[in-house]
Structure formats: structure tokens, C-alpha cells
Length: 633
Image (cartoon, rainbow, N blue to C red; front, side, top):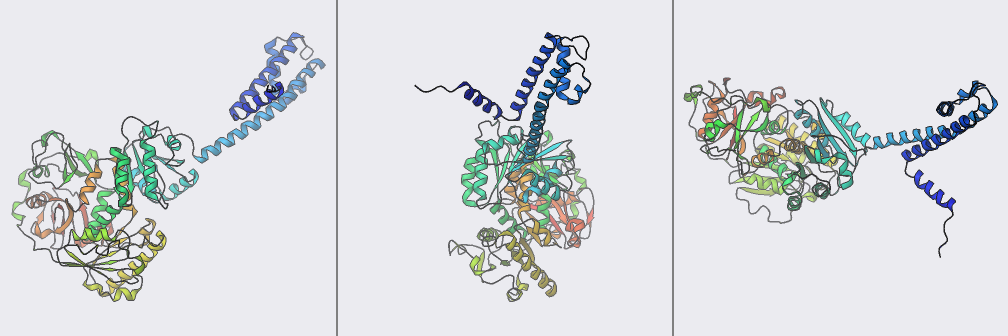
């Protein structure tokens, strides 16, 4: 038979359990003990009719009040008269000193612990309609900046950021790098985005959207996928689908990511996206500015709209029905977005038009009078066949093969691509990777791209386009960007001194180094995580827009081209944008803007690029100016 524990041990065990429950439990029991003790002393004073200050005895409640006051303030008993009353109040005061001291200590410790908990960022967020950012990298600051611009016409908005960094550190970084939050509040919380318990802190069930950024770790894709799994499989998740946008880096991880996210996640495929942007922007001066204008929240943005009067009209008719908006394509009710669809495609009930507008309240349906179009200025010009091009690719990383295959989709047969990079950086899984290219012949010349002599020996003047890639596979981001910056400085200096006229696109790994590059012209576009951040912010505000970007950067669909204005209208004659729309329509293309070559080096005038210009305003174009169109070739 087991021996029974003594009652003292049981009481000690019970007392330990009560105290281990924390500050609230301690305060509760101290309050109970104080109440009981004061009540007992008040009962003694009233029952034994102890004279109060040599006066008449007092009833219980009056005695209780006198005892309570002496418990809270020891100096109260200094004026007491009568030894029996003094003794009773001395006992009350002495006991109160211990109890109140203990209570003050517990309250102070509890408040300090609570402040420390608040500093750790572990309290639950009570917000509705907020945007949640999970993870941490330099992209977070760009995303917050863009969301602030997107929310500037709203009364109150909130962004919640959670990562495994300390809350105070995140707040300091955001305060330092995001200078104007306008009417947007940013709330930071400390926790692991992959932890189901921690996800409760950010209140996902009431969030408007969720952005999962790629963390700064050895296996970022794995952590992103685990975070998505924690969100979609959360036991307390809401019934309706989440609006999640996340980035994935390696093409090999895409299928697994699609399975995990299902229909709730819009994936931004970083590798494919950056490769396609580089391939498109390197061949067209000013295209980088156009793409950035369409991706950020400054100026005009992409919206979806429908109007009952458009049902039954063709896309070719619809492009002139908006006075203040450029039309890009159609989003059918049952399929993905189509940019620059056939001009004869009929809009049906439920179809949306994809348009460019300053804001959603600036969409103005106003069909144009055909007399506004200057038919006599439209030219019927067929451009000559595309000529072979020579391209130089400096540097190497895992995206290089994808970039070259993308370029092969755009260039004419007989084109040449020369690759110069450190020998140890060039890694091809298949030696015949480039042998199947239809339009390009690839030549590899190992060399150190940071050495000026290497660049001088390449005969830069013969190249039409130069692509400068980061050594991100073999070097940390900062070292890789340092080599890129050195090479870029040499290239600019050689081009200026020898009057070379190649276009150039440069890849940076860290967005902070983009500003160090001091871009002085639109051709020197720096591709970095900034573009990915812009896409994440846009898709978080509108889930449908991801299909627009997928079509825009897919070589199989319509792309953006800057074509000579002389292919559409006669130069040196005043013409409005309605006339340019009609000229492009006749070629099966959709005009969305133009570029004035005279302003190509003027950043104050957006390098001459104007997207969604006023359609009634007349402008006289020079021969070297360009029309910005969506076209299939």
C-alpha cells in the first residue's frame, strides 16, 4: 500500500501549482488573502467593540474601510488613539506592508514581462482586410512601398509582416527604408511562417491577401513551399479560398509548388520571369521603362472593366471606346487573359477588357467619333525582313541557358550569341544545350569580364546588344554584384569613348546595388529582385493580373514592341493617338503609348516613354520616334 502524502505536502504542492500559473494567479490569491485578513480584523474590531480613537465602536463595514486604508498606507495609523485599536491597526498595517510590497513587486514584474512580450511581437493581430507578408528579405521594403501607393486612396489600411527576425529590428529597418507610409499602418510580428501555431498570430482568416517572399536562406524554395502548406492546411483556416501570391526560384520545384498551392496560390516563377525580361529588354531601347511603368503602382496601372454596351462589339471596335484609357486585351469569363487578341474577336457577356488607367475611378467609357481619326496620315508600310543580330553575354549563372533559348524565339536566323565568362562559372548539364537552336549560333569565349583588356579584345563595336549577368551561382550576392558593377563601369566607359551604340541590360542580385549602378539612360536597365517585388505587390492587389503578366512575358503570345513611328503614320505632321490606334489596328496590333527619342536620356521625362497618353492631344513625331504596341512579332 502506497503511503499517503501529508496534508502539508499536498498544500505545498497545490500552492506551487497556483503560483506557477503566472502573474494573474498571484494577484488573484494575494487579493483573496488581503480581503480575508481585512475582513477578519474588521470583524474583531466590530464584535469586540474596540473603541476607535477613544470614541464609540464602529460597525463592521466602517471597521473594514479603516483596516483597508491602513493596509494601503502605513502612515494612516499615525494619528490613531487607544491601545487596543492601535494594536489591531498595527497588525493590519504590518500585514499590509508585506502583502502590498509583494503585490507591487508582482505587478511591476508582470508589467515588465508584458512589455517584453509586446516587444517580441507575439500578440495576436486583430485586423480585417489587411495584407500579410510572410518572410523577410530586401524585397519586403519594395513591396511595402508599392502597397502604400496602392492604398493611398483608402482611409485606413494595414500591412502585417511576420518573420523569424525580432520585431524591433524589423520595425527599425522599415522605418529607415520606407520613408512615407501615408495612411498605411505596418504591424510587425515575430514568428516562423512555417509554424502553424505562429500563423495564428497574423490572423490569416480575415486577411485580404497573403504574400510569401523568398527568404534569405540556403533552400528558399523549400521554405516557401512549407509556408504554403502551413497556410492551406491550417486546422483553423477559413472556408473560402485564400488569396496567396508566392515566388518560386528553381524550375524543378514548380510542379511540387503547384500541387501544394492548388487554386489558392498565384505563383511568380522568378527564374522564368527574369530570363524573359532580360531577353525582351536587351533588344529594345526603352522597353525596360515601359515594363517598369506597367508593374509599379506609380502612374497608370492595369485594370479590368466591362460595360454592357461592349457586348457584341469586336475587340478592334473596343480599343477606341475609352477616352482616358489604353486597351490591352480581353479576359474571357472562362479562360486566361489574352493580350492583343484578333481584332475581330467579339466580346460576350462576362468578358472583361484589360485596360490601363490612372485609377479604377478614372475608367471613362466614351466611344470616339470616327472623324477624329486622321485617315490621310496613316501609312501602309510593310517593314523589311528582320536582320540577323549579334549579341554579347557577359557573365554566367543558371538562368543563362533559359535566356538564350528565349532570345532564340525573337531573333532572326543567322544571329550570333557570344558568351564570355569565368571558366569555372560555365556549367552546362548537356554539352549540346545550344546545338538545337534554330536562329542563333552560340560561341563561348572564357575570360574575366572585370578585366578591361578582356572587354577590349571582344571588339564591342560589332555587337547590337549586350547582356551583363551576375555570377550568382558561384559567389555571394554582394560579391557577385561587385563584379557586375566593375564590368558595367568598364562597358559604359568604352562605349562612350568609342561611340558604340549597343543596348545593354544588367542583372543585379541585391536591390540595394541597383541605385549604386547610377543608371543614366533607359538602355542600362538593371534587372533585380525589384521587378519580382513589383509583381508580387500587383498580384496581391488583383489575382487576375498574374495571367496578364504570364501572357505579356511569354514568347508564344503578344509582347511589347517599340516600333518606328514611320511604320504607322507620316512623321512631322500633327496627329492624335486615336489615329495611331487605328494605324496599329490595321496591322493587327494594339497601341498603348509612344516614345520620343529626343528625351531618351531625360529621366525627368521618363526617358521619353509615355504610356496611356491623352488620345485627343495632337503631337508631331520625328522619324526616330517609336510607337509602343502589343504585337505577336
